[in-house]
Length: 156
Image 1: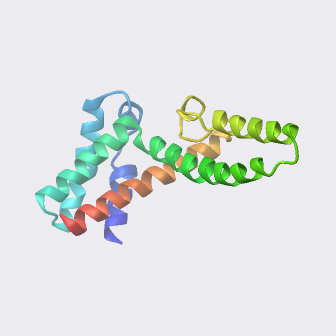
Image 2: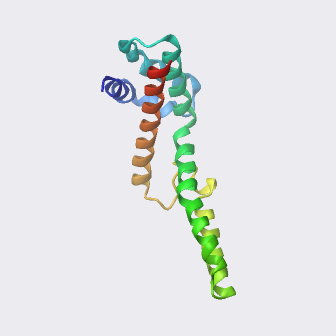
């Protein structure tokens, strides 16, 4: 529970508006935010290695927006692959060539919808309402930070 509270304090209470605005475009600001964020974790008496991973991963995740890549990959795996498997069998069983063509067009449309060029801002397709995509990427980002922090504190 303390780890969660330290994460929330570091990422929301100790992050200025200026840090938030600059961390995606400036490694210096991302680093400043990562160190500020990570300082409170010394309350848990981590090893230097664990603290380094918490700080370094926070810098990388925030500076390069890595959560959007994780979300996009998740959408590909959970969106396209099951659809591909199901469609592959139904296309083979399609009654005629027109049915096959319709199913292949649907598959190609879904591939375009989930292409990186259509998802690069948040990891979600551009058709997803901006407020929803924004909230979902914040949740994914927090989940990634918490998983890395917990793993570092447990195993390093």
